[in-house]
Length: 115
Image 1 (cartoon, rainbow, N blue to C red):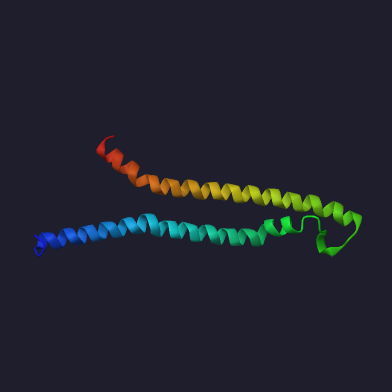
Image 2 (tube, rainbow, N blue to C red):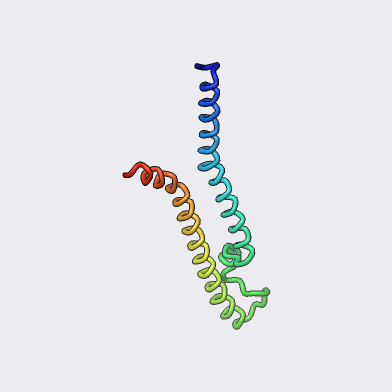
C-alpha cells in the first residue's frame, strides 16, 4: 500500500493535517506574541511606566523646587497606575483570546461528536 495511490493520498493527508496543526497552535502563538510585544513597545512609548518608576522622585523638567516636587509625584503616580491597569487589561485580553483560540477546535470536535 506504500506505493499506491491510496498510500500517497493518506501520506499527503497526514502531512497537511500535521502542517495545519503546526500552523494553528505554533504559528498563531508566534503571531499573537508578536502583536503583544509590539503593543508593549508602543504602550511603553506612550505611558512610560518603567521610566516613571525609575525617576519617580525626580521632578519633571529637572526643576528642583518644592512645587515641582509636589506636582511631579502625583502625576507620575497617576500615570503609573493608569499604565499598569491598561497593561493588565490588555494582558488579560490577550490570554483570554489565545485561550479561546486553543479551546475552540476541541469544543467544536466535542460538539460534533455529541458530547
